[in-house]
Length: 145
Image 1 (tube, rainbow, N blue to C red):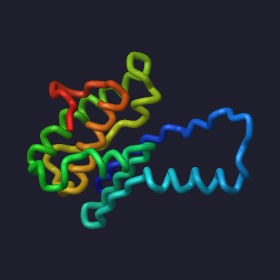
Image 2: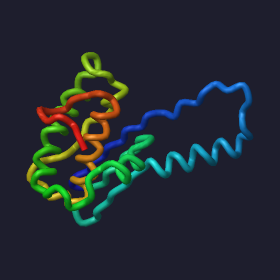
Image 3: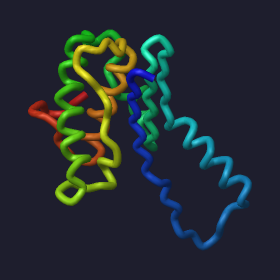
């Protein structure tokens, strides 16, 4: 594959301590459903890339809070994404200075490659979600919806 764009941010599901535990099969089914609903995969065979975002709550946030597709131009999304990716990769390369649990992997995203609107839109919105959820700032722009 020419370019592989993986964003695999897997934050483990926290299993609370309860006085009573539900039946194991029901628990496994609920966890599987939650994982599926919070996994977004975008693939394009012609460019040979894949982006996977696994983040509890992101899918619901994307549907309920993000601006609709088409609101931003692709150029704006690409310009913001390159800034966010560069800062993300800098932090992923320095796990001692930055929380290694937040920045687990570097992102292979190159300026000048047309990943398409959908990838740029979802990547941009993931960065906004991430910054708002984890109180991080990846660039000079205030993260807002």
